[in-house]
Image (cartoon, rainbow, N blue to C red; front, side, top):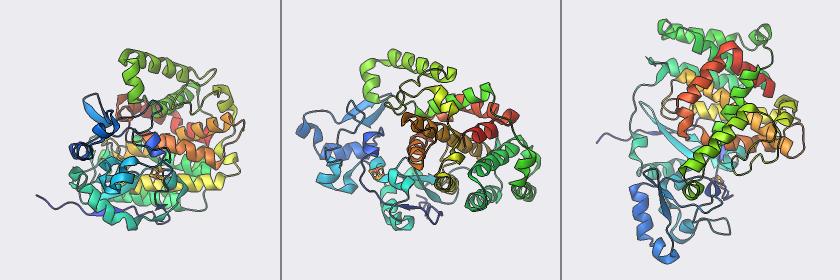
Length: 420
Ligand code: SF4
């Protein structure tokens, strides 16, 4: 067998992480089990001891069973995991051990990306990331596909990346999000402009050195170019696409409720909520277990953009850290994002931020505020990143069409400038 790929710790120096035991991931995530996990659970004899099933079959896969409120069947009242408490960390299912790390292989190495669905990651609390390497090495033995080389990455649609092209994009993104002389709004407007410009370019005839020159040229024109290329507010159609993107990221049917209600009722409920999100009028329908309960669409639309927040600097730092972690941790495209080409992955990252800003403003509105604070943005980013690269429908044709529309008429720039 080939030697496993080496693991590369996330090269975002300021990012920290240690688990602080908030238990949020155990109250929320559906955990798919592998054969090795099932074997461990059988050896631990849970079903005999608890007198109830601890797994559930859904759509031909086996998952950890959740309670009605969506929490894991092993989550104890003290917020700790019962498997961890009785058998130790290494005896939990692999996905539970690995979270919030996301192992993404490419041709030469496995990148250790991070999920911002974890509170400690968002709040940047804990140890240096390199201190987790030995544990990642151990855990990845149970998921060998994360240590196997993948095919060459795509740069754009049906266009394999040539040596140095992806590294050039990564370097430009890293520098752009590390600069301290850019405002929050210009930073995301600039990123949307860069990604849209690359998506429009005929990259087939601009390869290797010429591609690198093009990217450098575009990046060097920022942010001055933005002021020459002002954009109007988002059109109704673009705002509707944004709300649809938000719905696609928030909607999450728990296996327990899908089983108890039946497939038809669940699908009908989803269609109704999706239609209400598209209309954007009245009260926001119940999504993500009441995350935005009671808020009116009109109030969100009238709320201030994030740049007006007293926490705008903190929000900028969080978003910049997130963007660099996504790109340098392999979660923005390729195996970490539905196998997508880099240029489309950049657009998806911009849309994820626009959706986060919308949800943050809705969270603020829920508290009766017209401007979002860093806590609203952290909550929103946790929700949005939870689905990024994970929810199958975000890698499907509907999302691709949404991004294609938003590429036209500066759609991405407009929705970002309106909300940020
Ligand atoms: S969300 Fe993060 S900090 Fe909280 S329990 Fe899960 S891994 Fe630990």
